[in-house]
Length: 136
Image (cartoon, rainbow, N blue to C red; front, side, top):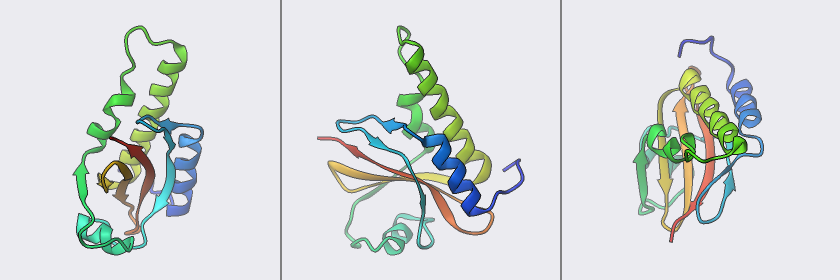
């Protein structure tokens, strides 16, 4: 966190602006939306409790690098639009890393998976982005 900390609301607004019109690709593309957890999302159990999920709900934890990897490197023959989109994803990932600590990605459920990219804001709030991916 090198930059001056923005308020949670200001950071959520910046995330919304950076993610505007970006659809995360999967079997069904979904938008990335700013998200603020209702509680401590420092662990899968914490996320389940904060978001009112059943204790048996499967939660997989991964890194932002692993999550964003498929959208950061377009194929060599990609056109300008794909290159520009990859750059937007890169800026979005950097925004998360610059303003949040302990950033992690939670994949909740199976097939229609809710994805939370969350980190701890200096205020103590857990916030970031959420989307959905479909994997059959």
